[in-house]
Image (cartoon, rainbow, N blue to C red; front, side):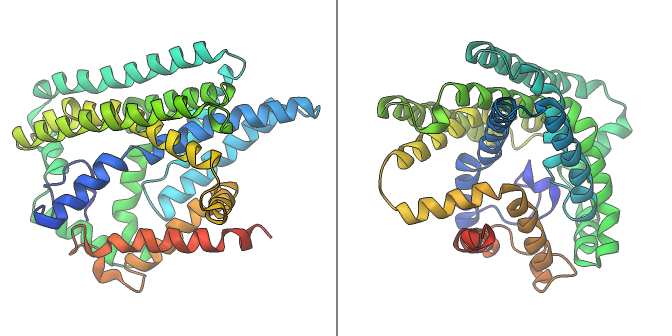
Length: 347
């Protein structure tokens, strides 16, 4: 698919029948949800590393800033050389700031998380009101990014079906946008908010499977009974507005923006309930092994998938024509392989 299809599913290909169901399923349960969990765990990791370093007499601040400094470096390389959808740079930049909250109480962390989330939401809404006042040429370029014409689609597909060097013409500008304007106006606020929320949940014992079954079920209920209906309502509104660029990107996106918090917490509650039980213990151990090698698995996922689907890969013809269904098995297959081999990687 082309880049525009991530925010506007009508931008490319067929969105009917099974394709629509696949898009809806991923939009409700995955889009912004798993990255939200990843962000919360990153925040939890900041507190965990700080506590361990302090207890051992090390220098936690030096260790933290060295860690996020390397994340920024690897994030830039990852985004510009392999995949513009990198998250490491964002985590590194946000990690420079959220570390200052490491000593705060869970109540303060949650309150601060809500403030940052609200700021990100208000910026998006403000941009939506500002769009009509943009110069005509900027609006036309904006529209082309949202609903690209045949020529733009052909150029993007040609780039990623070409050699590694050919891909740079599209990947580098997209990566720069993510690392600058999109970080400042969109992604940075939510990522920082989720990190603070993760720090709070870690201090409250939520990630240690220490809560009661009722508490975890309340998280699942929030995701299932509030988060998902909220996102469904947003989808209905997007289609009612015919995926209008101003509404869909700024106003309509708010339903998934806020709903993703609740669904991510719902997934967290579900996984913690699994951790408290004895079901599928072997699978649980392998999943834990994947988590212990999160960085290498993240990079390897990019290397494997770009090698398969990009122009230098063995299935490069799938870079474009398939809308949703044909490549659906690929990410599941790659993840299944990573889970199966995770314990070997740690030996």
